[in-house]
Amino acid sequence: MMDGSEARLLLATLLQPYREAGYRQLRHMVGRSEIVEASGLSGARYRLECFVSRAPARARTLTVSGIASEVGSRRWLPNQVAVGFEIGSDGSIH
Image (cartoon, rainbow, N blue to C red):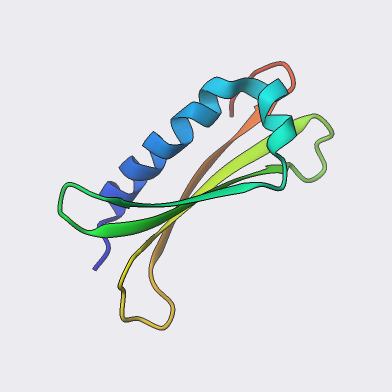
């Protein structure tokens, strides 16, 4: 079974460079995604996906989202953990 805390920690690490990049850099990444596999401290393997999109109904806000799922899960629909943040053109992070 997936360890949600471990998955959130891995996602936070993956998303940190996106937080540091700022709005100007991220706006050029809209529509792109990054997919990596990583191991948690427990040895469990995770598939991590991060993507940047425009926030609906907000003209100058971007959403950065990350989703983690356990690699090798035998479930038809594996458990997933999602985290993310919004960044405004003024650099504010929500």
